[in-house]
Image (cartoon, rainbow, N blue to C red; front, side, top):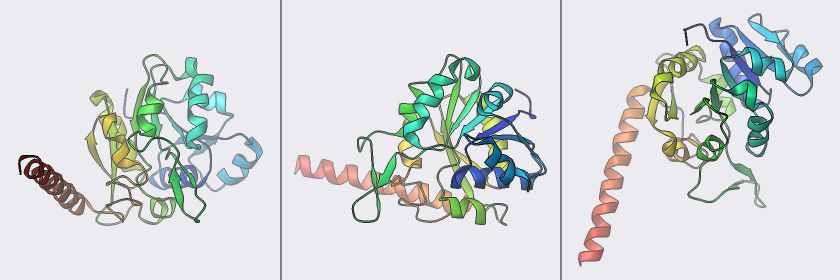
Length: 234
């Protein structure tokens, strides 16, 4: 892929809208689509760098597809557009959560499972999935974009050849990209994960703060392992 990949943002919920607005600010051209094209056209009037299309057309024309839709809908989206998605980069922003009975949120998949790995299992042939753009809450994704120093967006993918494409996308949304590893690290980037704003990291962080956080977590993990060994051997 070249550095002028076409981007399609599918869905204009809180995350999708924030991503689209940030792309527009950077001057990066993109396609935007949703189930109600008329509503998408109305919202997109404010974005001079946006092209409105129906979902099928957006997926077909894009090189990078961002399905900014609820986690339960992602599998059906991947299956419905499987042919058009072959060979493309799919950015998974989903979080596997739903409201709980206490006014908060609960995880809707197994505690040790991740949306990233589940969605990757439904990938069309030759497509590459990256877990990205979902480590910040929508409000922070809007408010913290293009700050100085820039805040970090973590990402994870198994296919390292797409790193430059992913990192340019993240930079064009106003953030500093930091890869944390393969998709087996997706759980860390999702809600309640240690690198999610709604998890241990607790807030948008700069690159320096992100490095300190990662080092702290490494020390914490080593300490936990040491304690377990002492317990076993004691």
